[in-house]
Length: 263
Ligand SMILES: NC(=O)c1ccc[n+]([C@@H]2O[C@H](COP(=O)([O-])OP(=O)(O)OC[C@H]3O[C@@H](n4cnc5c(N)ncnc54)[C@H](OP(=O)(O)O)[C@@H]3O)[C@@H](O)[C@H]2O)c1
Image (cartoon, rainbow, N blue to C red; front, side, top):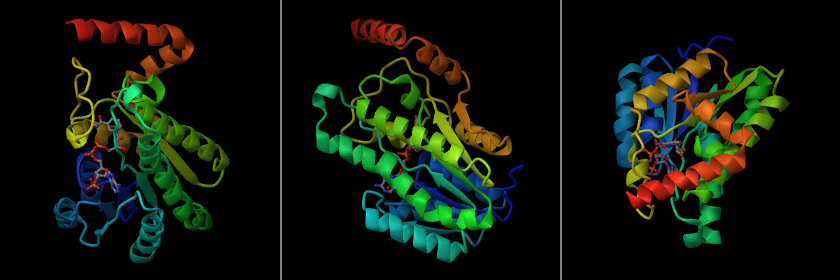
């Protein structure tokens, strides 16, 4: 089932900046009709304007995914106004870089709500029409943090791991349904994610990739009908090394952190 963006109705969450915005613009330029959502109306409007240059039927909805009622109404409006959803991209996400000693339960719940519960809720809301059609794509933007247990991000890492495992189990349930699931594992991408207040700074010495490289990876994953895509690809090997020896990997991470703290 080769992926051709032309005429595809694509719902993308978190498209007011970063990966979501770049992916919306790329897919619109390839002929997809994109429906985009986020909270910042002005920024979303700018992205929509750029999408509409190529795809005039594209539209936007201002929506706070922290509110379960807003997620339901987003699904209803997208299905109605786009006439269906062929591709759902659950991209919206928040970091919460905090050492575990600074975390509280409410923060963990809030991260879980945006990064795990809302994409699952939206997926379940659009799934019936994909099942009825016997086709569709669900793209869930996870993170290498889900597989590497990155330091100072326990809440974020766990929320992304939950999204990944849900996606894998869903892919299995949907194996012969005609609906394909793609899990995206970005490394460190140059977006506004690292400027959001109330987050510890990123560990030093980490190179960020341009957002267009990540978008290339998503498009390649769709074209290949892949279940997962790591961008950059070498993170897949790092994840495999960690899975083979979790204790050894964490010991190495701890030594690396100490080295950078002392430098
Ligand atoms: N950048 C990286 O290095 C990296 C690495 C791994 C994974 N990721 C994942 O990639 C995805 C996109 O992140 P990004 O790097 O492109 O960062 P970004 O530029 O900060 O984009 C995040 C998007 O999510 C939206 N969003 C956040 N909270 C929302 C809410 N309550 N309701 C609706 N929309 C909300 C934001 O829009 P508003 O603020 O306008 O609502 C924004 O459009 C996230 O899931 C992130 O975890 C990023």
